[in-house]
Amino acid sequence: MSRKKKNQQLQTPNQTKKSPKILGYSFSKDIASEPPKEPSSSANLRDEWIPFGTNNLFPQELSELSRAASTHRAILGTKTTFSIGEGLRTKNKALATLLEDVNIYGESMDDVARKVLADYWKIGNGYMEVVVGQGYLNFFHQDATTARIHKKGGHVLLHPDWENARRNPDDMRKVPMYPDFKKEDNGNVYRTMVHFSDYESTYYYYGMPDYCAALDHIRIANQIGVYNLTRFKNGFMPSAIVELNADMGEDEAQDFIDDAVAKLTGAGDNSKILFIAKNGDGDATNVNIINDTSDGSFMELQKITNDNIISAHRWNPALSGIQVAGQLGNNQQILTAYDIAMSTVIKEPQQMFLRTLKKILKTERGISVSDLAFYTKPPVSLLGAIAPTDFISIEEGREIFHLPKLSPAELEKLKEEKSSAKKEEVKEEETGAEESTDKKEEDGTNN
Image (cartoon, rainbow, N blue to C red; front, side, top):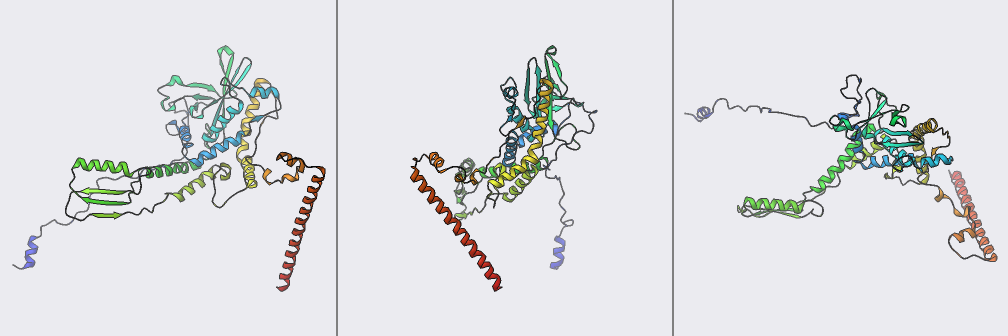
């Protein structure tokens, strides 16, 4: 039999390679999300409240995000600080005394306003409860994460735990929205809730924070830090791996692994040598040198993320202490940025709060005041650009620096010396200007 026929007989049928069978598949999780939408109709809602976000917990999510990204938190804090400034000021002494103590907790109106406006910037909604009683008018801040709007409108529902609100309905409190009041204690106490929010199209019940377009970027900023911290803590990076050919039992091998993890991960444990002991097979010892050339991860992504967060806040990075590469900045630039931020971002919520406060004071206590306002002060001044000698005399300057007084003759001599030095400076400047002009004329003639 020929070799060709023999090979043909040895071949078995149906030996063609089959295509692999797909047993299953899945897609990666989509973690991007948009701001929640309000229900188009409240008639079909099973609960008494208008849900705000997935599982009715969007305010809680925004509150957590405010603690998740450093740039975002810095801007929120600065917005609140600029909104309050030095506090509320008025020339009405009776009103000033009233605003110093506005509730049973001993808080001032500045304290309440700071919390309400902090919620406004953070969550897009701020809540202030007003209680009118026999001879007193109290103001309380209510945490925006605990407040939801009643589905029929006109009331605010307060609950300490909205995740379990259905299980604990007795913990819920219902307060009418201003200007409606709820009568309590046989008419001796009246209670209402003021809701501060901005207009947002398609949102009838709740406001939205101005940074809502950057929610994903805030989450990314948080995850970059989490990723790098996890990478650092779990950074298994020895300087070399040495495989040793030796007999080792399973228990000994596991002890070795546990010891290696303990000694080669975490701060201060990088760049060590890892020894691996194996059952001896006669091979020579193998040494692998590892070069770690990695540096910080996601640096470019972090810059893009921060830029988007700042833009969404309509903010200037210099106002929150955020360093910008290539820009040293000066007091004049910071003042310009401050003026822009105050007029385009801060002024509107300030006026919204003041209008409501003035209206309540007038209707409930008959106090009509026009000069009540937030006293704001820029973070820097131009004093550093002013020469002290232009505004104080030699005698005043020596007194400030605790220098001995000069006699009239010594003082006159010092003034003459300063005057002569100033004349010399002016003369040098004029000479330099003339030389510069002559050089320009010379260059023009030559051309």
